[in-house]
Every structure is written in structure tokens, then in C-alpha cells.
Image (cartoon, rainbow, N blue to C red; front, top):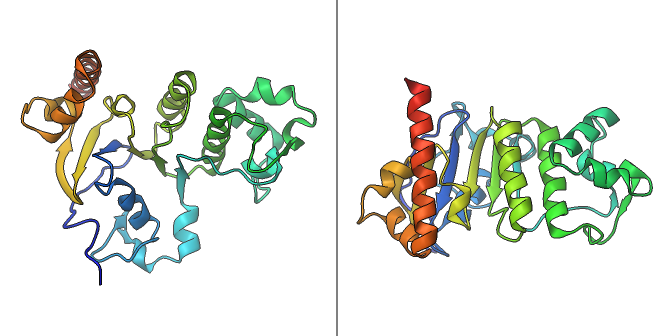
Length: 248
């Protein structure tokens, strides 16, 4: 039996918290997501709202967790089918979700609108647009847990900003886990989890973690370069001040 990728992880996440998961390539970040979806053999237990996911049926579990993968998954067929494969939503709801991700105007120009056809996994949409379609699909699911698997690694800065904006507005009441490829996407999160060689080495608000100049997050931030590091420190500090202000 091969050695476990994740070792001795033990942590709790509060409802509606926004959590960034960071670490070097191969640290085990994506393995956490695989464990939540039960794609891997798990020892120990993962509980969501006090329910051990090991006792849930796979379909039941996976239908209640939304994921936006790095490579957006679109199906051949209509845009409507991609947004609502089970045909549960009214047109008005589909258009509202597209409006939330700023795709409504573009889709309105396409022949057939919601019934326009997507080719070969959505090749007639740009990478950024495919990402936003996945985001609209997640909005329509109304799940309480959203996972972003390095979802902003391959998109342009404008779409990146749109995705962050959508998370803040449409997923405010959801728990969001973001596997961060770029640190700027998670420095304003409630907490950041640093994974190193399968171990959880740091977990806390980015501003608190950055105070430790020998810490893992501090070193990851410094490795981005002086100018970038300064910006990341400022974002973390601003988020911390805002958070403290809310709790007073």
C-alpha cells in the first residue's frame, strides 16, 4: 500500500467561511478536494454539518458540493443544458445567473440564445467565458459548499476579477474553498491553509500568518517578488482591518 498523500490533517471550517488552500506544487492541495468528493481512499473522517460523508451515497454527496475546476467542463449540447442539465430552472433564473457572471449580453447576441449549441466542450466560447458558464451553473445549484480548484490559473485578469466579484456577491452565504494557484486570489479570505508535503503547517488569517517572518506563507509571498509581496501584504492587512471592524 502506497504512503498517504495527506498525513494527519485535523481542522474545522465554520459555515460561510472563505478558505484559501496554498502550497507548493505537489504539496497535496488537490488531494483535499479528492478526499471531499471521495475520489480517493480516505482514512479518518470528513464531516459536513456533523454528517460523516462516508455514510452518504456518492451521488447525494457530489450533488451537494459545487466545484469549478481549473479546466472548465462543458458538455456538447445547448448552453441551457450546460447550465441546467436536469431542466429544473425557469428561463428567467438562467438569464439571471448569466447576468450575475456578466455573460447575459454576450449570450443575447448568439443565435438561439440559451439554446445556442456548444461545440467540443465549448470551443466556441473563450477559456474565460467557459469558466463563467461553470460559475453560473454553480450559482443555479444553490449548494452551500463551493470548491474552486485553481479556477483562476488559466484566465485573463479581467475574468479573474469577475470571478472574485461573483464569489463575494453570489456566494456570500456559502462556504468556499479555493485552491490557489496565485496568492492574490486568497489574501482577503477569512483564513488560509498552508499545505506542505501532505501536512497542514499553517492555518489562520493571512495577516496573522504573515507576521511570522519564518513562516511558510510569509516565504511563499516573498517568493513572488518584492512588488508583488508588498501588494499581497497590503491586501491581507486591509482584509484583517475590515474583519476586526465587523466583529467590534
